[in-house]
Image (cartoon, rainbow, N blue to C red; front, side):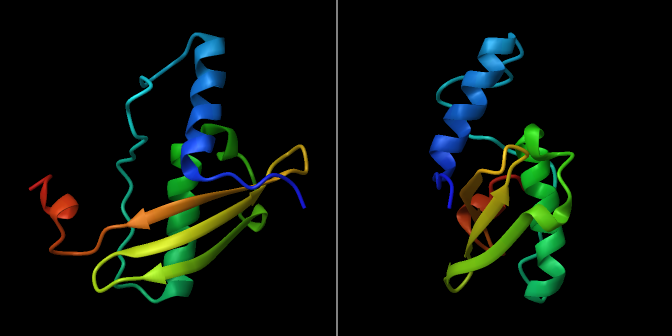
Length: 114
């Protein structure tokens, strides 16, 4: 199989590509964010398309990939947070994996915007 990267490696690669193109939208100390949200109360099969849309929004090079190129698996779940592994078969045939943490209701991160 191809390369497997954690989200930090994927973010660094995305940042390097954007910097090379002169289109950097964040600095080295920023974490990617999206205005999209995923309701962690949804059943997992209904959550998967939303997680894929979130990844496509965060990583622009994946935006045009067919959803069938994505695989979403539960890594672990806490009482309120959900940790997912999203594997993507990129256009070059390589596999890349990122970890997505979804904050549940009543968590410090979730409440910070309210």
